[in-house]
Amino acid sequence: MSKNINYKNAVAITRDIHWVGFYDKEAHLYCNPYLLIDDKDVVFFDPGSIPHFPTIMRKVIDLVNPLEISVIVAHHQDPDVCGNLAVVEDIVDRDDLRIVAHTKAIRLIRHYGLKSEFYPVEKNDNKLTLQSGRVLQFINTPYLHSPGAIVTYDRKTRTLFSSDIFGAMAKDWSLFAGDNFIDSMDIFHREYMPSRQILQHCMEELDKFEIDRILPQHGSVLEGTQVRKAIEHLKTLPCGLDLIQD
Image (cartoon, rainbow, N blue to C red; front, top):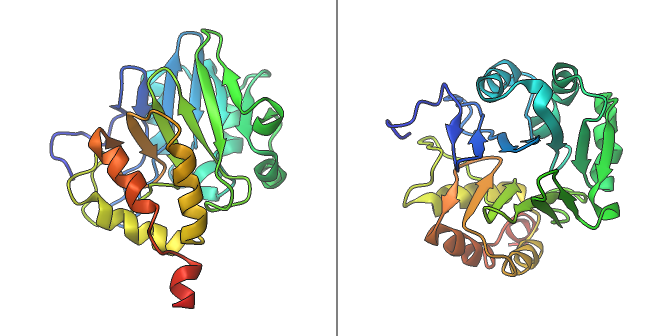
């Protein structure tokens, strides 16, 4: 873990994107919610689980008034991604709050007992335009690792919020990836991704985008040359069913 970062506080990734996650020494699997602060909109990505809620929300409150959160993006339905959605919804307390997800994920997210309006990405041209004109583009990444999984591409900063893809597991964690990030990334993908064929298809789709940084929901932020290195590596990584068959 980097000694120069105080993980008790929110950490700026860019001027308007912040990590508000939870550093758990025992888990070896770190959850990374992010907050995008843009003019009149605040977007909360994958707000996290119930156990982590107090720490995450304190970091959010250090940055913004929760009433300013207008959009929540749930990249898939897992409890570590959106288990605390109902509690967050109560804290935000906005009638116009929108929860962004794919319809295949929304079918399951409904079971968290939410009252806010859902914004199904595939019925909205796979994008959301914020009040400033900033465009968030959503990319469907089916079966990585759920049928309705998506990732978000912020065109303004060329940032990919990648959910579980590019995630990692490591004992020696840091928010920003070091030189040995490939090994930690392999461990996660071999266990949680279904097959090399499906993963390769996703990497080929991401090749179409100019990406300066990747912000995964687990593991560490990838920047610069790490982005291309990670994409090329995952194109050929055996995982899931490949390993069972072998």
